[in-house]
Image (tube, rainbow, N blue to C red; front, side, top):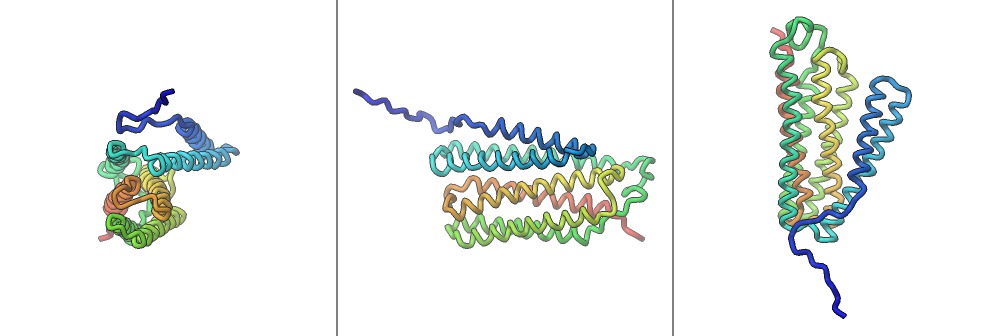
Amino acid sequence: MMRLVQTQKHPFHVVDSSPWPLFTALSVFLTFSGLTLYMHFYSKGGFILALGLFFVVICASFWWRDVVREATFEGQHTSFVRNGLKMGMVLFIISEAMLFFAFFWGFFHASLNPVPEIGCVWPPKGIEALNPFHVPFLNTLVLVHSGAMVTWAHYSVLAGNRRDAISALIFTILLAVFFTFLQAYEYVNAPFGLSDNVYGSVFFMTTGLHGFHVIIGTLFLAVCLIRLITHHLTKKIHVGFEAAIWYWHFVDVVWIFVFIFIYWWAFPVEV
């Protein structure tokens, strides 16, 4: 009796059925529903928000596990697939840049032509702007150094030096966590809030969106660190690590614009 053997006649990856896209979408819906309820002071809003975030983390973890399994153990990520993943990451970063462009557009629209309702000045009357050369400048140094560290980790991987790559990646993650801590400290001690006219809204929405990207990038790099320790990444095949590096450099560049315009350029200079 002849035995039929199934062979793949193309280099592309036909994705297996997975429950994680549906479950992740439902978890995100639950998260934003809880956030909306929490912002409108409903009693169960905080619980729903926390529950949604918990399910998002669980779904993302299992989904990420499946992708790593397909790439590392099943050999599904051929050169064609890797090129497609790189192009997808580039397009994703471009879409994220457009998102930040919208927030910067709102900032310049409000600051270059301040309306009478805010006193025709920027920052508006009654707003005490943060000094850009205190915590913001320290955060800039931290993030720039983290970009240098992740570049060192990348070149160490290319050179086959796992020890230096692991050390550099650990330093990068520590700097990222320190940046988030400083940002939270600044938020707690800020002399204005999210509801303090357009200045507070633009400031917290833009810096908060960037902070969210920092947290996602930190998790991305942490997964790469685990994969590097467990010998998943080689000096020839490390697409996931490259994607994390691109994403982190994008976060660095966006912060430079945030520091220059929202902190420094908008800071009133006393004559």
